Length: 144
Image 1 (tube, rainbow, N blue to C red):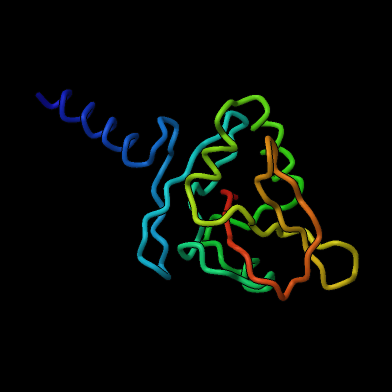
Image 2: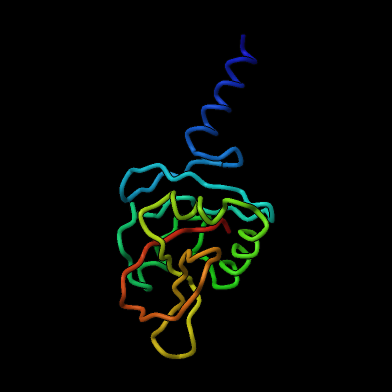
């Protein structure tokens, strides 16, 4: 009986998060919402929903927004995720469908100007472009 309950709890967790490889649920202290995470095949762990329920953050706010133990991904981490998306069918669509935004901040700055990278799910890949740091976009975090 106890084994059946444990199996049911594991299956419920997987269904609740929408993925069989979710590793934990993070509670967004700003909104009280639960944010599912996913462990990728390279070992990185990503938020599968936006922090703050998709509210817009300026770049300065975004680099401080992730909870302890998590960080705003650098451009190189988005590029790694892009390679995984090519190898793992459905990953890109999972990112698109699991939130309100298709645009997320990167922690990387572009030169000395007040510009940062903005990453988006376009077509069959993630694309990172420069944008002004005063714009407001969503935040996805990755585990330290």
